[in-house]
Image (cartoon, rainbow, N blue to C red; front, side, top):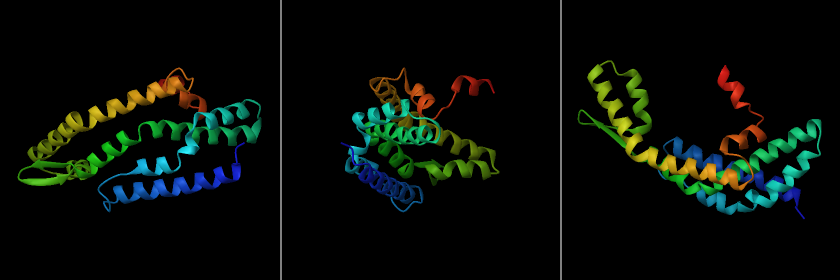
Length: 182
């Protein structure tokens, strides 16, 4: 039997802890991203059993109740998917915060490089920064992100969806086919 009061409290605590970890990393206050520990602490929120229970309840719900259950299903499914790739997500985000672009004898943090490119008046410097940034993306980030997206796709199928896109068509009510036509 699911204790929905505990679930509600844990969802709030999980969200707070994860947002704090993300803020600290992106604000430059923490170099290493470690959402993995947070996902492990709250792993009970992202079980297939809980996902299926909410999915089943949603089938019989109408109106506002269906909408609330869809949001809850979205949270559990997204969390389950992210749980599977948590180490890869942390690795990619940590790389972004640690990598430096070297150009013209200067080091530029990877995350700052796009801003410097946009503001650099000298075309040659801009080009060197752009090539350095793309090198980090191609050689370091993309292999990790490719593995991550493949795991997300495989896990979506394990959850009974056609693919990763079908998950979000269901739980977020996004019509990607029509969106693509716009």
